[in-house]
Image 1 (tube, one colour):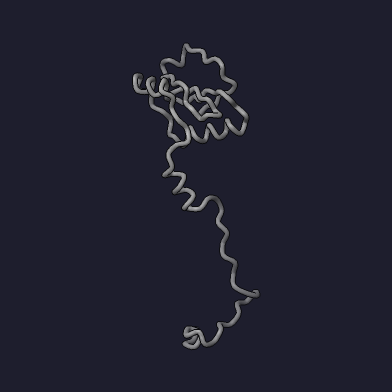
Image 2 (tube, one colour):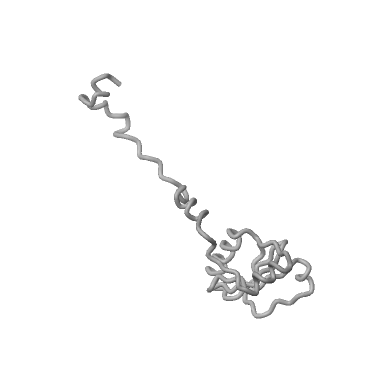
Length: 123
């Protein structure tokens, strides 16, 4: 680039191919979207009963993001009441209200029957 081009007196010569390259288009969510999603509180809630069971039995809940993703999947499939099963817990959830209704520890899952659900999702 010449001194005149830098000073803005002369336009730079055109690039071969007809003009400036197009800016790259982002693929996926932007950084701002990811940051917003990471800093927002979870969109699901624990019922008082579920919170009490988790505290009393020392149940390790799956990450909030995994529960959110599971609830999104269940919503897309039209589920109403479901059980989410992980290695550390089983959670009975009401899908439309995004509420964890109750929680079972791993030792309780072996001999328990979960009724009144229409879906199951393994985390």
